[in-house]
Length: 267
Image 1 (spheres, helix red, strand yellow):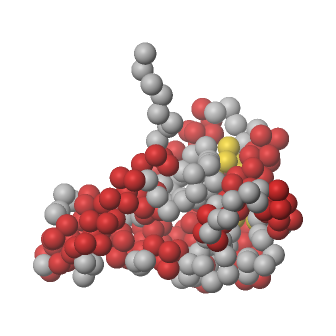
Image 2 (cartoon, helix red, strand yellow; image 1 turned 135 degrees about the horizontal axis):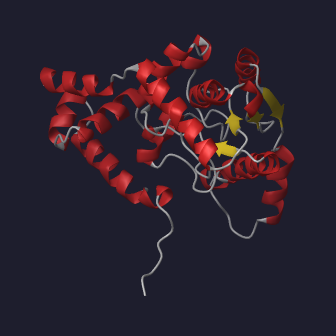
């Protein structure tokens, strides 16, 4: 079990400088190929969006990166704005604050035919944010740069046509724990690196609370699957129940529609 665990942990270790170079090159190539003038990034004050902003600025220069902070007044914390401002000032990029509270309120007022859960209603928020990001991106001839990581993509932990509605995903190749490794190399503020991950969908909401597993454990499960290990072996090495490992495998299959193009029939 110890050997398997070590294999999994080794699988999750990255060469941060090499990862930085590859991702920076990717961003530059994508922007150039699109005939775009830069990037628009949704900043939340969290780890993933901060790392994405750092990478975009390194790739394109501060003049070609714009950050948008899109809070909801009764959910978003004051600390988030402080952290967003800290990142924007450190990078020297332009950023705007656009409160989406009134827009969400109007959607809920008009779309009231069905009773929906708090979780389903929360999907409005990332979709409204997507609209705002594309408004600025289209107006400035820039790409919307997504901030999703590989852990979220495999778990389907994002909103289709919301935070999943982007042009490129520079850190979509990195698991959450790998994003944290890269963030330390990039010089992201420590208070952001170890901040509790949250999508800010409702008061008290956290990523790990919704997923029902820590990112460290989740990433170890995925790394085990990447190594071709059986669920039982992964379970023994990670202390995650085998039934939970199988649930995560099934969850990934169910979420494929979120990252694949819409099915088109062949005639």
